[in-house]
Length: 171
Image (cartoon, rainbow, N blue to C red; front, side, top):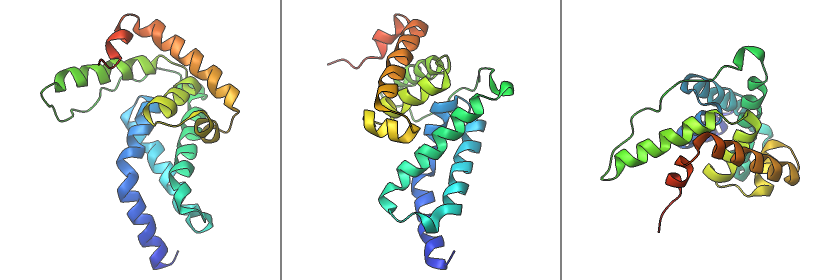
């Protein structure tokens, strides 16, 4: 890569590395694996940097690469155990303790959801993608996204029970 392309990549990496790492954690539930997945996604992006013409689509490209890697890894027999990593401490505000507890509860619940359904829930509700964007990121139909969303939410409700009502925003 030429110097300008390297600088563009470095700028993109610095701007997006934390967000990609957080999304990887939400997808796999383990900070060490999240670091590996985020790194793999950025290495793949670097390898294809010159061929990606639409710089506005970089987030979508990284998201799809990341989701594919996490879902593919979850299919490996040695990765079927559940992760037990805790979230790192986050800045605490006036209602910070409740926010941290809520976030931990949600992440714990997501760990119980199968990987493909978890990917749909993370992309739809935590990354803010619509059905079509989620389908594009996962390389599936919108109908699959809708059914995986319904199944994932049902699993999350079963796992969290009454706690799910506490997670809903009030007001």
